[in-house]
Length: 363
Image 1 (tube, rainbow, N blue to C red):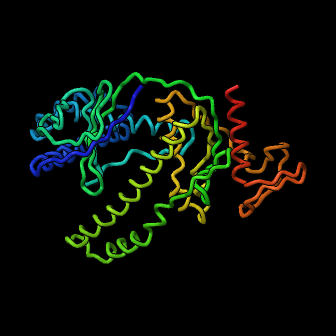
Image 2: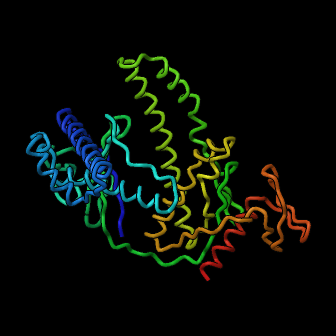
Image 3: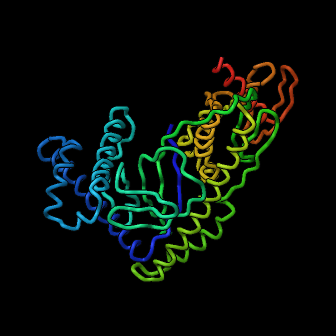
C-alpha cells in the first residue's frame, strides 16, 4: 500500500534560491514540451510520445546549459506531467466530458518538482537534494516503509514542503463489528445513525471578513508595487489558515470515526452539481465533504475498516421504519411519517437509511 508523508522544509537563503531556480527551469521544460506536442499535432497531425520528448530533452541540454543545474529525472518528470495532462485530456474527450486542453504554466504557477527514484536521501533532520544540497527538515513523525518518490512543493505563502510517497505493509488491527451511517450536511457537519451530531466548524465563514478586508487592500494596491506583493501574500496567508484548519478538522474527525467503527457508510454525493445552487455553493465548498470522505477512506485502509458509499437517492425522504416516501422541504428538519407515526431528526433518519443501504451492499 502507498502512503504520503508531508514535512516542512527550512532551506537557507541560497538553497531557497536554488529551489526557485529549479521550479523555473522545470516550468520552462513543461511549457516547451507542451508547445512541442501541440505544434506537432497542429502542423503535421503527429503525436509525440513521452519517450521522444525525453530524447529531445537531451538536445535541449546542449542548447541550454542551465538545464544541467537540475537533476535529469526531475526534468523528465516535468515532461511526464505533460504526458499525463494529454492522457487525461483524451480520456475526457472520449467520455464526453468538458475536455480542458492542457495549459501553459505562467510565472509562479509551477509550484512543485519530483524526484521519481534517485537524487535524494533522508539522513536524520537533513534531506539531501541533488543539485541543491542538504536542507533542514522537521520530521514530526518517522517515515515508515520504503520511500518511492519525493515531491518538493512551494506553498502560496512561500513555505517549502517535502512529500514522500511510501510503500508499506499495513498492520491490520482486529476488525470492529460496529457500523455507522453518516449523513453530511450544512446545519451540522455530519449526523450519525446513532443520533450523534458533529458540529459544522464553518472555517471559511469564520475568516470571511478578514479575507474580504485583505482582498480589498489587494485590489486597491497598484500593480507591480511592493505593496501589492505584500497584500497578495496576506490574502494567501488567510486562505492557507482556512485550508489548514479544515484539513486538521477532517483528519481528527475521521480518526475518531475509524477508531470506533468497522464499517462507515457515506452517500456518494455529486458535489459539482450541488454547488450549482448559488445560495448554498459557498457553504458546500466550506464543508469540503469530499476531502473528509477521502481522508476517512485512507485511514480506514490502515485500520482494516470499510468505507462504503451508497446511492443518495431518497435517503432523506424515505422513512427508516416503514420505507414509505415522505415529501419534505429543505426547511423541514423533523421527519414525521404519516404512515407509521415515526418522528425523529431528519438527518438521523437519513443516516439510518444510509447505514441500511451500506450493510445491504456488504451482504
